[in-house]
Length: 150
Image (cartoon, rainbow, N blue to C red):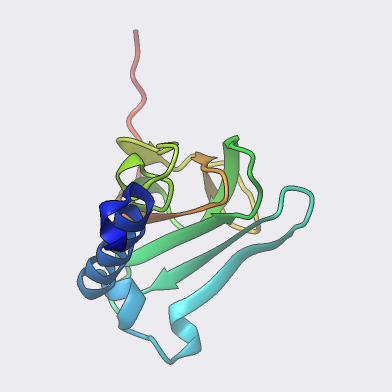
């Protein structure tokens, strides 16, 4: 039985996670067969072999940022453009240890910064797992970030 082997079980768990994510994430299915549900962020980073794109739902808050790293190298502090200011949360990562990966993840909330990148007004800095894919969901859109004064 193949599922007795950790890697096979990890792949099965990853597919289960993808199916659950698809069913519970409107950005992945609202405009499944329409161009307005998809937007490239960047497909030209040939030096790092990374591509990124957005999936969008009917609600403007339903945005998913997908980033793929096609190399066996971890990419730390990799900047990706985002269309809105807010907090993003990793909802899928093919490299999680429970899926048989090396567990290079982006825990917690990731704040987009007012740094223009990829033709977008804001951007996030993330860690990309080796030979992996991450999906970041817009967790909270904000108008302004409060500045802490010490």
